[in-house]
Image (cartoon, rainbow, N blue to C red; front, side):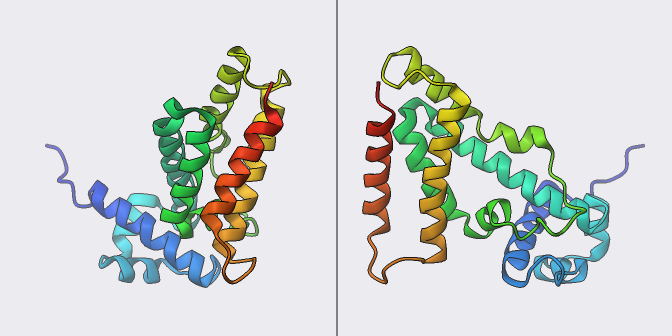
Length: 191
């Protein structure tokens, strides 16, 4: 006889979302599983059943973020490098807490949080594929794909990170600046 499903995927997703928000707000050291369970309207038993413990929960949050980010990039891939760039910013603005956890270093000091290198690296695959395709079409300079992809990623990542941190003039037109940066990146790497 199979055991009944007590904790489902929607609860799992809610716990991941709540954890990202709490860790973003309070820092990983201050967030307890009791805090997470309470914010999600469940018990700590549910957290332990689904994740095992705090380090596994934090790892799952980051890995889920990278999968979600990758999915958004895969969906944007048919629109080429410009589409990937636009999707990067859109995803970051829609998932601010998760973006900061994935890329902001908040979990770097939390040694027990070690996302899978395959999951984190996989988030870059759509960009690498788009760079290779553009090079194959002769529209992008012929340099090592990884070098070009990392350079592009760094440029869009930097601008998005500045926008999320609101580092810039108080009346900054972030959308306009981002679109200008995407155009400049395209011109800079053009064949």
